[in-house]
Structure formats: C-alpha cells, structure tokens
Length: 463
Image 1 (cartoon, rainbow, N blue to C red):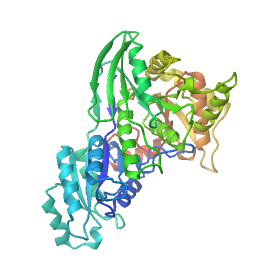
Image 2: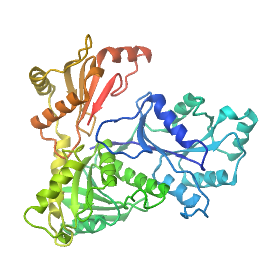
Image 3: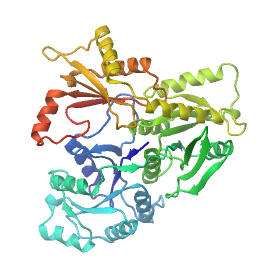
Image 4: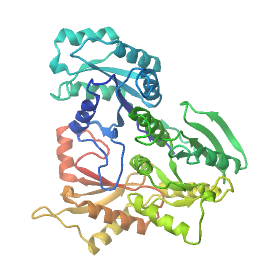
C-alpha cells in the first residue's frame, strides 16, 4: 500500500543560540502538537508539527553542540552526523547578536556535507543590528532568515521556507511489502529476535545494510507475503548517557518507525516497563503504526503457573494508553512464539486495511448516540451528525462531522473509540477519530479562499 513518510526537521547549532526557544515558539504559533492526551509518555524534544497548508513534520530540538573536550566526549561532528542521518531538512541556528564562531563554521561545514536541504536562522535578531545579521551571509547558506523567538520575528518567513522545503509526502510505491521494525532499549534482545525471525522462514529474499548505520534490513517471505525486518540500535536511557546521544538514538529509531507499518517493542523480561519503554510506545502510537509489545528473554525467567499472568497485568497497567496492543512472551533461544509474531503482523495489516461502508458507520454512530449522547455546557451542546472513513489514510481513520465538537469531553471520545473497537476488530493498531465542526470548517475555508486541507478546521483527534 502507498504510504506517506512524515519528514523530519532538525534544529541544530551550538549551545545557547536559542534553539529550544525557536522550537517552542514555532509549535506554539501553530498550536500544532498533533496529540496531547492523558497517559502518553513522549519525548519532550520531538513533536509532530503542522503548517497552515496541512503539511506535517517531526520537529526536533537538538542538544547544544559541545566541544570535544567536554566531559562526555561528545563532539560536534558526532552530533551533526547523527542529526543529518535522520533529518530531511536542517535548520542551522546561530546567535545574531554575536560574531560567527569557529563552532558555527564547523556545524555549517558538516551540514553541507549531508546533502540535505538547509536554512540558516539568525536568531536573537531583536538584539542585533542589520550589519551583524548580514555578516552571517558569509556562511553561504540560503535562505537566511532573521528570527527572534521572544519577539516572534521572522516566523512567517520561516513557515514559508518550510512550506517550500518540505515535500507534500514521500510516497512509498505499492509493493505489497509489510515493514516490521524492532525497537527497544539496548540489550533487550532485538538482534537475537531479528536473526531468529529471519532463520525461521523458507527463504531470505534480500539482506542488506541500511542507509543509516543503525538500521539493518532483511526481507523474508511469509505465507506468500514479503515482510521487511528493520533492526534498530537500542534507545538509551535518560541519566545513563549524555542527553544529546540519547536524543539522537531516539531520532534514528523515529526514522525507522516512520518507515514501518508495524513495530515490535521489545521489553527485557528481567527489567520490564521502564519510562523509556513507555516513551517509545508513545512515539509509535503518535506515528499511527501498528504495535505489538514483546517480552523477550522469557527463557531466563524463573516462573511458576502465575508468573505470566502477574507480569501481563503489570504491563497492561503501565501501557494503559495503548490497551489495543497485543502482548507476546518470546524467547529467541528456544524459538518460543517467534513465528507467532509473523502471524500477528499479517493479522494487524488486514485490520489496518479493512474498510467500513459509510452506511454501516452511520448506523453504528446512531446506536452509540442513542445509548449515550454526549454531554456539554449550557447552549454548547455537541452534536455529531455523520461520519465517514478516510480512504487515503493507511491508518484506520474516521471523520465525524457535527457542531460544537470542541466541547466534547475527552472521556466521551475515548468511549466512542472503545465502542468502535467492540464493533470492529482493530487489535494491534491505533484508530484515529477526527471530530470536525462544520461551522468552523466553513469559516476556515472562507478565510483561506476555499482551499481544502485534509483534516483541518476545528478538529480534535483521538487515537
């Protein structure tokens, strides 16, 4: 099936040039965090943003570049290489109130080598004179945009630049191949499971190194379908290693998530459910991918008849924001439940591809509303009139049109998702419900000259 890859925009630069302020101001200007809901643990410096045209992208705030003599031995070159491997667009940020530094030049030189699309943000422009800003033209990067996060200077130019640099979508042609990514912390057994999955099959169709140093690809054939396995490097834990390194390991895995249809999140049976595991699950859910939670190294656990059920209850509690994700206990050593993962992947892909007729959806909607209508405020009663499925979206996604939809309580949206899952089997995949206020949508269309944007208007999403 053809799929959209959400591009990645990385903000890079030396320390104290205002990268985080730009990051927050750019998100705040568009109020563009796609999902902000209870229970989801997410990376504080990687969020999905959206331009006025509807183009979406991952916006990444990177750690400040540090000299090689830093106590963590983290060089500028290493961070830039990490960023450019995953990013589609790089926003190089400098401090306009100072002169060009040697660190600025090194950042620019390495960014040029990446071959990626670049823009130069001369930040803190409110504190700089025009000749200071103009002096950064010597770096040779165009476009050059003078910005100020505190004064909101240059953001219209920045958004216009992003509109030009970002593709509408990167389309993967329909090759009928299922892409299955293995994710998790270091040493949870990803490579062992990767090898076990490959060896269990009749034939390995292809085996090649990935374009990034941490992702390897192997294509196998299962029940007549090609499944591409993506083996990623481990995502490091906070506090154990410098923030910049951990961040970029998340970024590289984020790129693998975007390539995948379904993600296997591996948990070590001897160290279950850390905060980082939850963060990874949140990123997978945010990307709209299928998810299977895999407890690895099950052969190393001392267990009795109750061990599995006790652990399953604890995991279900910790991952209650993805209650639809199947849980599988595996061992790469003895092969326990390894082939079951392929069966689950095929089943999840079938569920993601199922299409429900508009008639059936609206019969269901009426049944739900009759049984439990939404509550609201005085003179602000939400009304849900009809719904349709988005045919173009590889994620099961549904538009529900009505009035006063912004007054729908999040608990009612959750209620609707639960009822939908009771009616149709969507185990293993997120479901997106878009609540669209027709009156607000008409106002938006009038404001923007009748241009139609997917999923815009006054909308809320639950997934």
